[in-house]
Length: 435
Ligand code: 4AD
Ligand code: MG
Image (cartoon, rainbow, N blue to C red):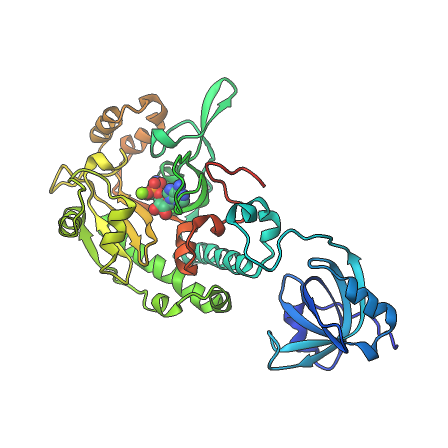
């Protein structure tokens, strides 16, 4: 057999080498065939390709090696690139030679149904499977789109600290750690810090991991998740909602445009996503409660909306829905009091359709020093920790608004997957710190 010089190529570039003999390195996904013709499907991280082995055209050792190949063994395959419209990806390799680079005996994840706990225990290997690859590519695309959206609108990215001394959202879900004899918390939000950066840059955002000691085991909660939080000086609550609908529509459009194949792998009904564009419908919290009452909900005015209420509201909507101006008592201390109704605050949640619930929480911020101090006291928060935050209201206080979008919840909706735990490479849940 003629041994050509090695031309190492990536599977997604095979189209440039039709008719040529190339070498690729990849992991074996499947092998089949024992008669005259056999097939090896290999994956190199850029794509997968079917390689065809004709028994009579290779030596005995090559055939023997083929028969010993296990799932996830790393191989080097040399062969001729052929165009084949029936092949997944459009190309096939006619194998001239195979070399085993690294064996893989008894790969735990077999092409059959596995329980989710088993898969999560093997998350480090599960990442290799087609659906997980598709999900994580969509995540990476959405994450890139987030940065692109704000970059093209001249926002400055501010990287906020993960170790903090002030409670950002709720005292109930803090991770505490010892910090040289002080208590530090893992950040629940970067918001207070991006607010501080507004007078420096006007339009800013942070994007990074945030932490909440959620004791709930739901399909929407992680203990470590990624949040993007823009903050805009001189923007009011209406401006804030407009930015949100443009932003979310852009993210969906980017996923459709650049991850269409991945959405197909995930069997996502893309028609529903194609219709996502501004403006999104808006209802006040009070209106929401009236609708919910008609639907039989027991939620009383003053309570936050739970997952069941959100799902009931979304029964009537194919577009994301804004619910604005919640009762003060149901929301965080920093939200601005509504001048037209002091029992409510100028805020909004954005609910995603198809049962995905809240993907954004946002608000205009309280810019009145005394009202903010009063809210901090009402909530029983340690005033000293917020001294710097109050300075923002002492020195040229300014109207401003912002929001936080949860990356994993958004990707769950876009990919149409049921549970948020697959939306992050290594999920952290109440009962999971491994792998
Ligand atoms: O509504 P939240 O708590 O808002 C804030 O943290 C504000 N500081 C944001 C801001 O105004 N800058 O959280 C915002 C979003 C939620 O809508 C949800 O998408 C996501 O963060 N989120 C979670 N995602 C996964 N697991 C959890 N435990 C989450 N908690 C919130
Ligand atoms: Mg919220």
